[in-house]
Image 1 (cartoon, rainbow, N blue to C red):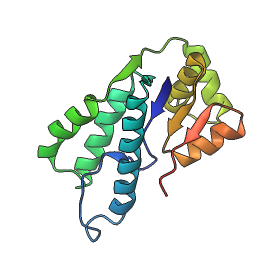
Image 2 (cartoon, rainbow, N blue to C red; image 1 turned 90 degrees about the horizontal axis):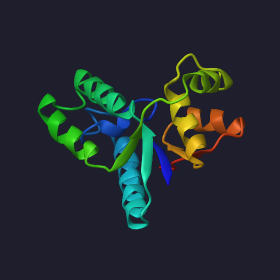
Image 3 (cartoon, rainbow, N blue to C red; image 1 turned 45 degrees about the horizontal axis):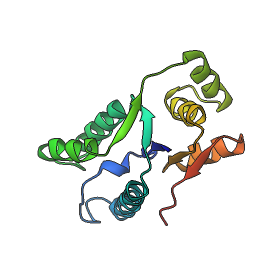
Length: 153
């Protein structure tokens, strides 16, 4: 069982392929996408279940909206991209313990509870949070929390 968090700090995980001249960080984005796809395939082959807070779907929509607004994703590609992301079997969990999530956000010294919700879920499930978000991984690991940075380099 794995708790999954694939949002990166710049939402690059959802950017469609563009030339380097148009999108200077697309090579990094492609590397990240390849690594995440490989992990998903491996976890599927191992019979691993993926879990995330229900807010994942909203974060995906937000990342797609940002990518379209920035000209990194054609609006015509949103439906297909959303369908492909939505086809990944992920067990979504509703927020269970709001005070615990708020306490985790305070532990992380963050004003937002979004990342905290992923960490609380990982702890509740007795598993690690896997993320592309380096600052989150370092922050959580420094506090002894169950987190694994997905290495893409």
